[in-house]
Length: 396
Ligand SMILES: Cc1ncc(COP(=O)(O)O)c(C=O)c1O
Image (cartoon, rainbow, N blue to C red; front, side):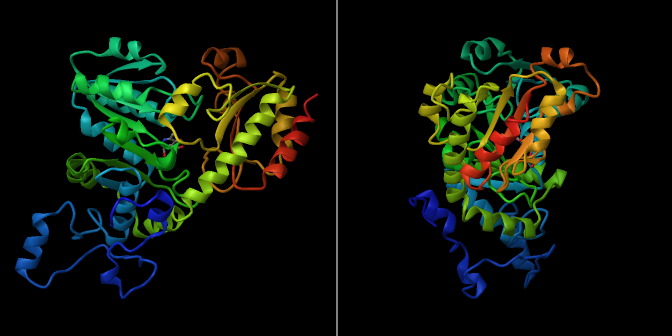
């Protein structure tokens, strides 16, 4: 399929490989581990392009391939590979570029388990060195470069405080120094941000968030050049074995048909909710790239074409009983850790710290008792605002 269609058309059109499926309008789920061949020559030929041919489902599966092609087109990449989870994509991507004793530059506020993969796996097992930077200052990144720096790993906006990195400038800097770049683009989706067009080598998503969109699948994807993604397929994908299940790929394909519509709705509702929270007297501040007073607004406008529905805010009160009262009185915002689904969610980062640390201790790490993260779902906007209003009124 040609790549000149607008995203909404691309996402609906399932004509890829339609000839092989009796004209079925929806591609089937090829729920098989193995593919058989008519002859010695046929299987020998399949092995000549093992990266792209369906021989065994740990390598390729037609249902999974259809979705991979669609995601690659959407992100303007040459090739995409789906993984069993976002973390499988994170670890495969990092491992691909790093060898024993190498150095990685990343941000101190990327997704927690991505930091844990560096701290608890790459450092002790591969002697990897790491420099954590804020990501807001390109000079800081330039100064962090060492002779053994092999990878700059970004997440823009980051999913915790939603700060941005200058993707064009950082990828130019990386190329000049022969350093590979990966970006976790989960927050923006390929609808609202195209990092490959800005010089990034490898784009990554947890498809468990907006791409899946219904909180019913766990999956991840890497997108990049044919050469790079094929090299990952041959090594980290096939040998670590974190493959995507055909049935989950099929659910992902179904979700992708509405990605464009869902993102429009997440965006418009989230903007109104952020403005409501920003004006509210019981809220100290709101972190959301869609707000007019967002401190990196010019960067938002220069590298993103829209914003999604995940944001954080801080309640003014530090009184635990009042904070819990707000949290527990919400009716439409369900309590949970993930985001990007149809349903609105709330989580308080302090919940993860409060058993082991005092509020003063975790405040020093940048987490406040009153910090709240919400994922704005697809419910009616007025209903969501009413829900927040009534819960906020419970704060004495
Ligand atoms: C920004 C970000 N990247 C990666 C991941 C990991 O994805 P998964 O849960 O699919 O392994 C998550 C999960 O929450 C995330 O928020």
